[in-house]
Length: 315
Image (cartoon, rainbow, N blue to C red; front, side, top):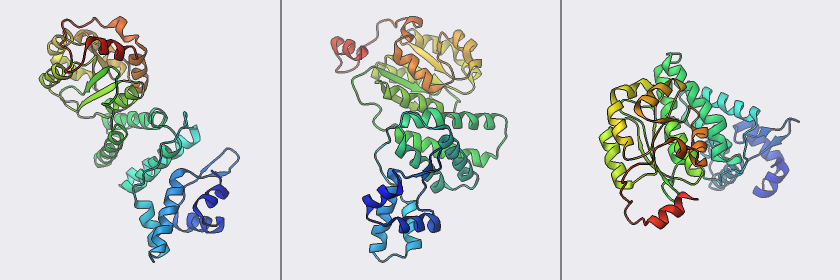
């Protein structure tokens, strides 16, 4: 929205809004190609909070600081694609925030983007490339370890927040996990969020999951698909036999770098590629069924009738 519309909504003059933006950094408008400032629902929420603090006799500078530090809940945006300039700006802001170990600044940059664009668009066009670059930096020791840990922990918690409720629905169920030793689950979470948005239910076991625990969970929830995600596919090599046994009961697939294709074949897995969002699209399209042998004698999930299963799988 333009500043005139923001002013009308919040009952604050445009001059005051400009002062708050310039003096306190309260507002973070994005610019169009014509250099017009556009304000988001998050800017609106911050202004409303700022007004409340000021009405409680809190000095404006402190009110602005409190408003910017608050974790605000706004309706998710509907934009289906993040413009390249907006994505680049947020990536720079995240990099600067992580370099300075400023969680609030990183939160603000990400929240502003999510107020304008859908979670899937933000994940596909901003977070997934950022996660991949972080993985490359980590593998080649191109950044301080503490900074990478800080960034990964931030992204892990924010992605899981976007994943809330991903076990609900009537669609097929995917059981997703990282194999033993793999302790970096960001690609896995991205895959799960994208697949849930395509109608699947998600059961998430997280990093470094023992294969016996994965098998026992599969017995309990009867997944339509098990997906393993790893950034270092050679870590699967010691577990080839165990994964093959798992594949005799359930369809199993792998998300990870292209270098994992040979390992996937040895384990009897379908390799879905390294783009987690694209991999979710492959699964949801139904093309996966052509490449995976149907499991034998799977038990039905508790309370799930065969008719309901067929209805869910066809959604």
